[in-house]
Image 1 (cartoon, rainbow, N blue to C red):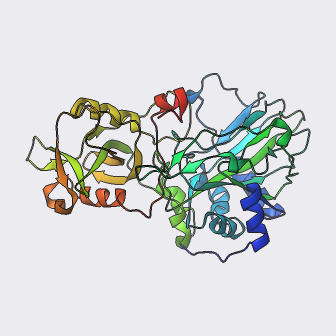
Image 2: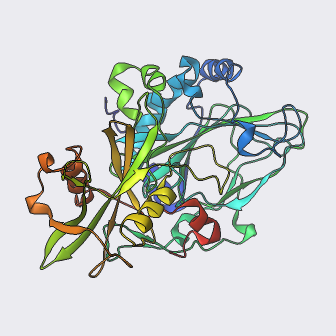
Length: 403
């Protein structure tokens, strides 16, 4: 990927750090907005099966265009737009990766969104520890259409600290007073860069026009989502120029069909990983099995299979983990395996009854069922990766900060 030159001044960078957002006027030309609108005219909204009570266009409501729609070149070009990628790279302090491509279309009468922030431990689009919004309005977000209002400095109300595991700890957010919100006066073609923890809200659309805008998210490559990336198809990657295709973090024709766990403990100062012996050939396997998506929360960004992995752990080793964090996607004969990690703070996994703790220094690919297992362990132990704690949807639905 070509790294764009830094495009922000020190004053702009300081303003973003202080306020949690930065507004760049006229970053996208009117011709480019018309091109995006052309692509949107061919796009397919998120499947209503996720929420059968959702309105049907053009009923009053908010319509989401996401999933594989950016395979259309008239939508994809904005992903690698220099006026977007340059500031995003500078503010993340890392190579960016697209974690969400989303266009929202709020039709006349569509309800607003109450104040909230978007760090979410159960979602591929919200569980990275270093991500931001790149928002481009297709229309002026005025009083009638519904302004996008932000609470300056509210991203500092989050409490992020180091813990006893490779993952950062995030305390519940403190809600700012409703009087703290301001209108940055977004206009067609502006670019609003917004911190992942910043509180924001949007009133209803009281006009007779549609309120449309791009709400993409970029995460640093060194801070993968704790649940795993949303997997874009190869067509999305091919829609970008060759030197920018790395902006799409995971692609492939195969879906995630399996899931595995790297379970690590430290004994006498040395890391060990829990292994199971294969019944077929005696080689070692990581715990896990068939992946299954949860539907406890209706979201479009598939990819969180932590719940099914935790169920495999209960059945295979009799143990429980309160959270997991994404390591990577690896190929198995049955398809792609999504691999997560967990480090035991002391001793053993709660309830653990079977398995052998193998010293990491002795791991060799040939001793394992698929060969990539030592690489997955090494990734988990890599201190340069900024990790958060991912939750299964059912856990997060109770309280995403309770575990």
